[in-house]
Image (cartoon, rainbow, N blue to C red; front, side, top):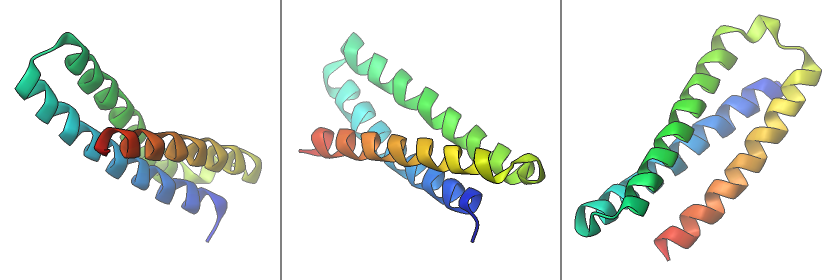
Length: 93
């Protein structure tokens, strides 16, 4: 597997983490009806759209990615995954 394949897999993981966050944020919003909860839902939705578009672009434009760009895409996706994993852990705790 190439670096871009791993980056795409990591983006898939990010999508799953964001879906978990959305589940909790929507559940909390429905019980509390706060603007902060609505903001968290909006934040998670935008990141979810970002990751879906990233997966689509990595799959559909794979021939345009150089190995250097793929390495940076992988690094950015791993950093986002770590940040989302911490957020999911804190949110579920």
